Length: 114
Length: 112
Image 1 (cartoon, rainbow over the protein chains, first blue to last red):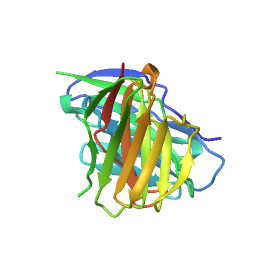
Image 2 (image 1 turned 45 degrees about the horizontal axis):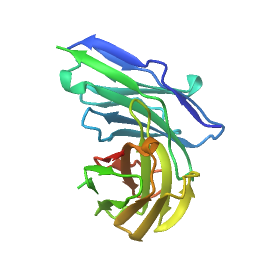
Image 3 (image 1 turned 60 degrees about the horizontal axis):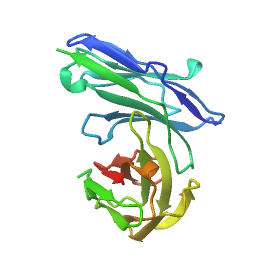
């Protein structure tokens, strides 16, 4: 069965600090996709990244970086030099190849304090 | 243009009303989705349309009725809803299955 666990329910950091959001997943498939989404207070989910299970290279996009480790079934997300605008709920998600649906974790609520 | 639009933004309806939610995308995506999201919870999948055919119905009560008139439009018809159906209803689309989904801003529904 598929499962995504985001153990951190809520995190608060002071602006400019780095913060890492953890994501651990379970799947029996060898081929799958992992995603991160951001949901700011406005409510709209914003797509951040999609990663294929065969591609374990870490990715960096501006202040955002992702660390994919198949050995520990983790796909962690780091925000460097956090800003108040980063305050949101962040969801990690998993999709098995050929499946129409993605499984979301419960989300981590991130507060960036000025 | 990675935009999914949803109307209305807010909807208040009584338990005997019939209303519809509308979702539109012009990205050429062939998969469209309806989700329901309660406060402080992740989105819950309701329906998936793939190439305009219903491919997943996650055991949603019949008072919710989806419709996909064409590849750009997705509707959700509501009838005889219950107060517990009050939630944020999100529409999403993706190029095909397995691809990232792009979400609309949602319709905040209140059933009185």
